[in-house]
Image 1 (tube, helix red, strand yellow):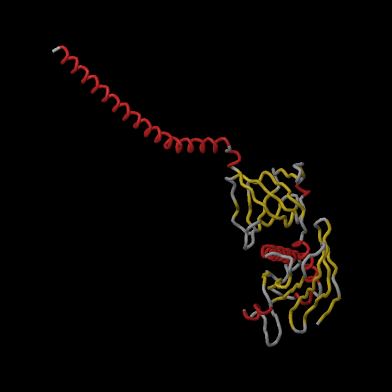
Image 2 (cartoon, rainbow, N blue to C red; image 1 turned 90 degrees about the horizontal axis):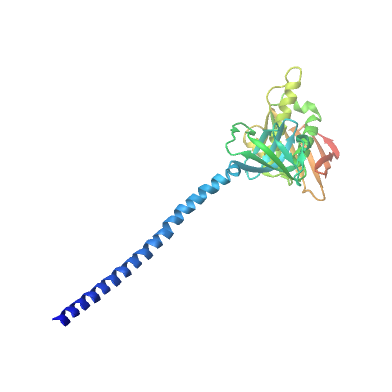
Length: 298
């Protein structure tokens, strides 16, 4: 009997040992599976926590955004610039008050050091607002960095338009439309053509308002060709007459070695036009000058 009891105890011991091994194996399996879950779930949580921490740590940088563009006009109070990447215009401005200006090396500049043609990068607060007007008004700008000086092509073309508009002023009598045909010039982007249109409109508006009698009233400036104006019925094709306006056409070649050749004309009718052929535009340190060529009148 004693041996039988020992055998039973031995069997019980073996059974118990086997059961423990099974339980240990199951626990190990559960621990490995749970550990996998822990490695997976906390990753999402850790990533989220790290992301939150990163956002908090970088909160000042996150509250800023940067815009790059090209200066069109600059004075002590306002900078008008053309934003990069805006297909249908992109003109915007901002005030110079409380704005820090720096050159390419990081040396601080005065606002008056900015010149047309400069490419700039401006930093503004992410919570800044924009004034919904044209040009777009940007607030919250606190830093402007000059990237490089490029040619002030828009400014030079504006000077040319002013000169042609001021020649034979009888052609401008009582006009309400000034159309610009820039389809045959090779130096302005679509954005820059729109900027030029706006600047010429501003110039004509100010010129009209400065006259003693207020001028001939409001003048619309549009980008259009002779054919388009004819199709719209603004130009009388049969009588060759533009009763309400003038058409200024500029034909220009590409800029090479900081210079280019161009022809320009102002047309009111078949018997009322003036132009200049074989003209030249040149740039030096970004600033442009021009020389009008042979003049003709019809």
